[in-house]
Length: 202
Image (cartoon, rainbow, N blue to C red; front, side, top):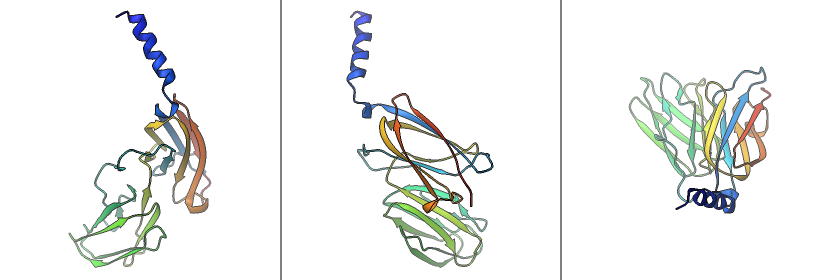
């Protein structure tokens, strides 16, 4: 078959392909009020095109208590996920949350014991320990497969995003906004989308 014809057919097919079917790359940079990169911010993209199957992130869905801290400090999970809370400290912990998306209370339990909680509603769930007031952590429950945290350089890259309209949500406990979240409407071009946020701290 003539190579020119094959190339023309490929270009013609791409033109006919709906924009929503084209997977784009979204790049987001987050800076603090001091201009420095903000690590650990959660970037979530909501798109009209819903995923065909269940949303999954890399396992484990685990929020450990280790060295008198929650590890990881922030955990992203899909709606419906079961999160385990293993205690890897020599002391006992009493994990709880008063957050509206998921209130729970895990009574005192000791080293190498594990409890679990199902997170069935979207939102940010703040964690605490009734024994150690300095302990805090967050479970961010999302309804989209397009959710990541910024790295040490304040950068996040999300691939495979459908081109078209989208809502970008940026969450971090230091963001001075309702629910510690910034919300922006955006149009994701087939060639990709890039933006930078500079947040105002508390």
